[in-house]
Amino acid sequence: MRTLLRPWRGALHRLIARAMLSVVVPTLNAEAHLPAFLERMKPADEILVVDGGSTDRTIAVAEQAGARLLLAPKGRGRQLAAGGEAASGDWLLFLHADSLPAPDWPAAVAAHYRVALDKAACFRLRLADRAWQARAVERAVAVRVGLLGLPYGDQGLLVPRALYRAVGGYRPMPLMEDVDLVRRIGRRRLAVLECEAWTSAERWRRDGWIRRSARNLFCLGLFAAGVSPSRIARIYG
Image (cartoon, rainbow, N blue to C red):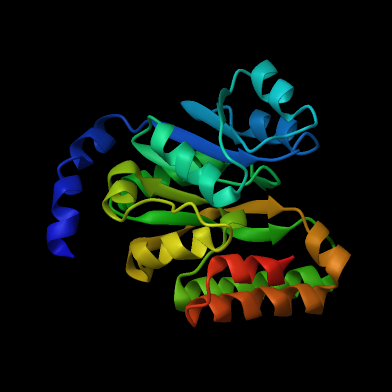
């Protein structure tokens, strides 16, 4: 592992001098969420929208906002992999369009730059719902991240470009692409930013709080057991 990491450590002086941030967001019919997302992420040096075949106004919204647009085969893993390859920043922030970081996110990212240049980071999850079940899910996610170092994509992933490349980046998987990547990064190289990302709770409201959470946990267990992401995707729904 030390041999693998040695090539990217030499890039740290560039990150200290001027850290360029690229935000990569995969989209598919994200018209409802994308305007607020793009507005919030304006402080980034580059915003790359990777669309997987939207039939609504997602592409028009991205173009009107001045974001860089990339078309990729449908599938979040494929889109993230394409975005990671095309992004030009020293740091890459991968985030879903329905996840909205708090307004002070640039300060939290800058603080991470100063103290953890060789680590990835994620946001703290907040669900956009007032139900007590939402707070319970948030606490469970915090425990999962703290103990296992396994944030999901709706918490975002901030990672130095050199580290991203050293571990192989996102793989074009139909599901679990986020878990797959953070497992290769490792818990000791993952921090939690002092900032929340508010995420849509639509899936939990639609499927039921307990049922959705249990299904997520079951899918994680299947992946850990070696079940193929294609089979897990059919269960995930």
